[in-house]
Amino acid sequence: MAILSLNDIAKDKIEAVQDYSLLAGRSLSNLLSQPRYYADTLLQADSIGVGSLPIVVLIGFFTGAVLALQTASTLEKFGSLSLTGQLVAFSMVRELGPVLTGILVAGRNSSGMASELGSMKVTEQIDAMRAMGVDPTKKLVTPRVVATVTMLFFLSIISDLLGLSGGWFISYFWLDLDPNQYWTTAYQSLRFGDVFMGLSKPVVFGFIIASIGCYYGMTAKGGTQGVGRATTQAVVAASVLIVVTDFFLTKLLMAFFHY
Amino acid sequence: MLLRFDDVSIGFEHPVLDGISFQLTRGETKVLLGEAGTGKTLILKLALGLIKPDSGRITVLGAEISAMREQEMYRLRRQIGMVFQESALFDSLTVEENVAYRLIEETGQITPEIHARVIEALEFVELANTYNLFSAELSGGMRRRVAIARAIITQPEILLYDSPTGGLDPVTSNTIIELVVKQRDVYHTGSLLVTHRLQDAFTMASHYFDRKLNKMVPLEYGSSRNVHTTFLILRDHKIIFEGTATELLRCRNPYIREYLS
View 1 (cartoon, each protein chain N blue to C red):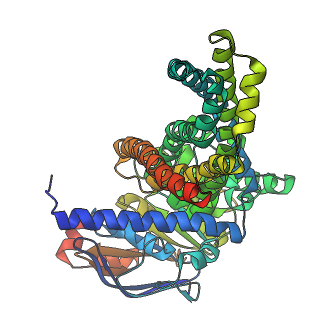
View 2: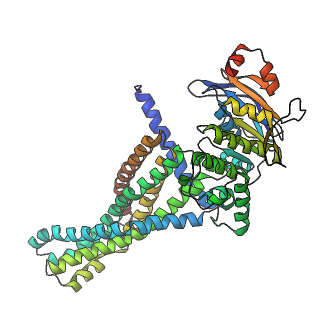
View 3: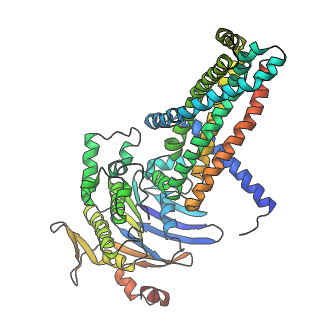
């Protein structure tokens, strides 16, 4: 195996960022021209959205439950147990709902996209598509990006709801909190900025998940080993990028809404 | 003139093609021969615009594609059919969906008219009863035939075959070559064919498709019938021979004599 110089490594990384940016940009610009593959988009939405639902429901519910459980002991010391609903609402809606759902969907769907498109790439199916006059970014990438952005938005909402429900479950059955008090504090504490923050993040995360998955798939090489490598890299890159982007997005939105 | 290469060169870490020039006329079949790594498949990919040359001009159906943008190429590629080495069928689609791909790529819907065209194309390759199977359920030879059906369904102006008999047994290879000869003689489509098998190349040059008998038959001795098949041999990044089978057999070049033996 040849040893690459730092120069070569840097050039490779910059070229990768360039190629990714071009693919990501094209995935959006394709929406402005024909043909548009509505059927493929719906199929992807079903696979990504409906397919991810059971796991999102479970993770959302238990995340909210464990939040309530963990924070109860601290809140009790300050005589603020009644704020459990508010705490779960803030945490789920602003942060944990979108981020955990994003990372879950990245693990499930970014890997799926990378392996599917990677398999097509190494068996020349992508070249066959191009040879038949079909733009693979329009046919394969754009439907996945649109479907993931749309579905992650709704999945995050469902995750938030299930998280609040999990928190309620613990509050009512373990902490003997009044359910009315729980839901009222949860609802009243949320402001427009909190909801906007919680619903704008899935849009960005969805774009990251799909574009990263498709990028690693379309650039896979080296047979089945290369496809495996692309799948792993897609999940890692998407997850890391979600967490990093979350930090900057949170900072930006907090400044915008004067938190 | 369907296709012309003017002084085309391309290399990756080292030169692969250097100053390649040839042309393909309507109804002509050009067989590309040469050792592995001489750039035969690369010529097909250049002709399709899947790769851009480092220098030179490539003209396809009157349009210069060497500097054409990818988006502009898509329209042109609809007039070209390609049969890939490993068939490259879409494994999540049925045979019918594969063959009809160009016709249904926007809607995914197979109308009765499209179904009829698919059956006609599959009948050409004698696989009409496989339309609802998936590619994994087919043998290698059957997949290759479906790939041919997919390439010809829109009656393209140019056909590109990348080792259509690669990895197949002699009997199946003969079936594939018969289909290529049938396409050549019935529809007079211009085509480039890459092959490692000399016997396939000479079969094409010494046989024709008899429509009455509905099979490939050898040319009679001394026949003046023109099968419009020429040979291109590549070596050391260049074309070292271009001509008919008769001219090839009479060639005194020591490398070519060794290659043919």
